Image 1 (cartoon, rainbow, N blue to C red):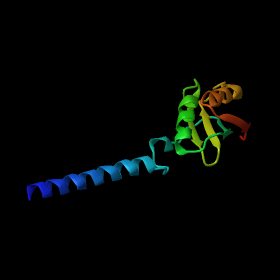
Image 2 (cartoon, helix red, strand yellow; image 1 turned 90 degrees about the vertical axis):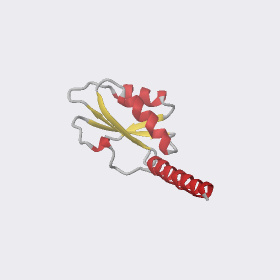
Image 3 (cartoon, rainbow, N blue to C red; image 1 turned 180 degrees about the vertical axis):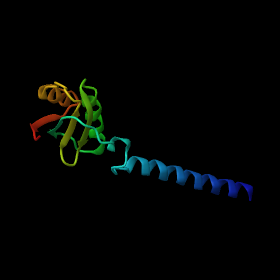
Image 4 (cartoon, one colour; image 1 turned 45 degrees about the horizontal axis):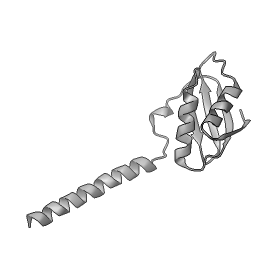
Length: 112
C-alpha cells in the first residue's frame, strides 16, 4: 500500500512539474518585466530568417548589448525587431543591421 501511495504522489508531482515547465516555456503573453515603458527613439527593422519563438531571443540579446540600446523586442511571427535607443544615442542603423547578421538573420528595411 505504501508503494502505491508513494508512486501516486511521485506521479502527481511529476505531472505538476511538467505543467509548470510547459506553461513557462509556452508563455508568450505580454506580462513580462519588459512591458515597462521605456523612452527614447524607436526603430523598427524587418528581420528575415526567424522561424520559431527561440529565434527572436538570440537576436534580442545581441541587439540589446549594443551601447545606447535600451531594449529590443523581436517577433518571429511579424518578422520584425523593435529597438528602443536611449535619449541622445547615436547608434547607426548599420550597426543594428550588422548585429542582426551576427545572429544569423537578414536585416531588411527600416520600417520606422
